[in-house]
Length: 469
Image (cartoon, rainbow, N blue to C red):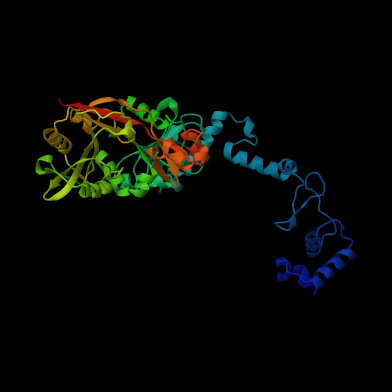
């Protein structure tokens, strides 16, 4: 019975009955085992035939009982473990194998680095499925921790520079870490075999701001913004606009996409990205299209499907037809109050929406639809606004069609609610005080903060104007 408790399967699992526990305590008392130790320690001593607590192999002090491993440790402290003869002998053996000297401190720093470089280089055969070195063992540059060497990724054939260190060199394309929304853009670029640099921190320079995807051949940058982490809680109102302006000064076209656009209109976002990449599936010349005024219903359905902002309330709606199929819509209205126009000026119209069907480009269609409107309504001036997140101030369809760039507005804001951006025009103070009269003494911002709404800012809007009369 006693041997079964001390050495059997039952004892190792710790599943002892009350009678068996009492028997262990009786045996411990007979052998005069210490009274101030745990039951597990007593059981361990009985099983191992130990009559007292073991002593440290280095200093001779009592050691502690390790509960998780159910045994006594060899040393009473880390200091004793590090200074013990066993540890020191192991260290001398390792130093001798690596550096040819028992004391690594006596080895010249460069010699030590060169020896490590040689050892590490011989181990690169183990990572050839990920990357291969574009250097030899003789190409040692001195140093080690900060020295970079050329590599070639065996998965994407991309050449890059990285340090020779433990693990493996990480390809900036294949081994980069992506958020869920970044993965969606990555999939679009990979599908089109686009060469890009992820998470590039060098382009913008001293500002040290990251570009999610940079395509050097097109000088195109793409940013993907999660809504919550780009609210005023984390970034100032001017952040997105300043980032766009920095890229413009460097000759780079920056596109900034909010996560709700990707999640709710992924196909449309993919189509717009493909257009910027010159990867549009089909192309139809404007001469083959017929321009006609269309109904409100026709325009609404097309805009919901093909424009990021969806439908609008414009009074004039034109459609472009190719072989009886509606392939483009352009709408006009009087200048909107929401964009700062207090008065209605005769002869001035606003181009409110323009879009074409997804996965197809229609060169010249924008100009053709503008000219059709001018002939029919004889405006003195046409104004329009391009979203600063998607539109470059000078390299765009407006300027190519004769419009003049008249500056960029301050960043506009939306309110964030349950992962959706809500237009600020729906939260004017005049509307809020009707719903919350007890908060009438506060400003719009203060009321919305009380209601736990956060602002998220865009990159402003570019204003374009076409003088006609």
